[in-house]
Image (cartoon, rainbow over all chains, first blue to last red):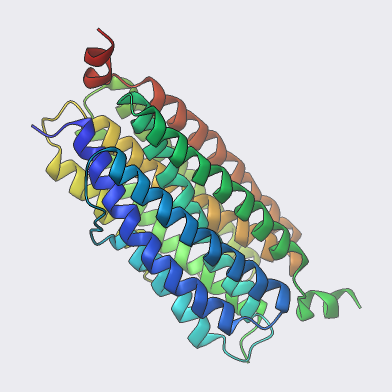
Length: 164
Length: 164
């Protein structure tokens, strides 16, 4: 019979796989971005992701398991859409807006997962694991706020034209 | 040259496809749920989704386009994980916890998309479209809060055992 502990372990493996994929995707998005402030936001998120992977390794350690990922179709699909933006909008003045939207989709995926995992860790009495997962959740919230601000500020030639 | 208008239209088609899939998935999740409060939350979200699809049709109408969906790998992957939960945790006391987590992942996907689309509509000067998209975004936020509360409250036999 599968238990909450199984759900928690499956979820950890899922996000561990996802974070590695996200690390790689954010490097590519930083390279593709036109505006320096967008590239900087993606690099910051990439650096945070490295710290988040280390925290996940600590959580695996706390439950006496070897860090291991399992394929996660949700993040694969989400990142695939980001790659399509890079391809379809190369050279477009709206490339950065598309990249920021793709990064926000990733951010929301992570927020959902970390909130769930932190809740389950607390319900299982894994207090230290819950604290680590919550630390990442708070970091994700701040990054999402930064991206929201960026989405509103980022130079949008069409909007400027229509107001001129 | 692709523009912000193209990004907006692509995004609309993407979420229009996603909402139809979500409608179907939420019906299945409501049928699979054990606790009545979980089934009720999924049915509420399903009914809201019907209204959100109608709002999207109004937005298509406002920009003079026929409502049309285009495959969205992100939602396909997200819903696939929900289906795996239903299969792997059938008969488990933790099935509902897994279903709620899957519903929250869907909710976060929708929040990310509607926020992006509302921002782009406003930047493109599409005030009425922005208002409709923002209305759905606010609805999604409330549903997400409800699911978060449910995730914390839902009967968790293991946690109860460990506290006994």
